[in-house]
Length: 120
Image (cartoon, rainbow, N blue to C red):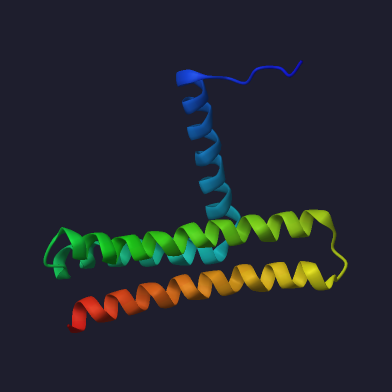
């Protein structure tokens, strides 16, 4: 019989702790995450100043948060691939390249959202 997991409020507290550890690890070990976080911290106040309504605020800031989310997922993929082995493997390289492409698309998405909201 499987051991039951934590439930209720304790599970929520533990999950929040693991999430905080993940954010700290990304900040400590991932230069791209730090750069994108700085971008968010600089542009979020600008979004609140330039946006005209709640939808624009949400799109401008949400697009920046999406970049951070995708960067976290990319960093997780890279960590797992690196943990499995350091030798070159086509699938490992492909996984890393696809994760990097996802970050690129998230950045392009943010740039397009900012462009369309600010120019039209």
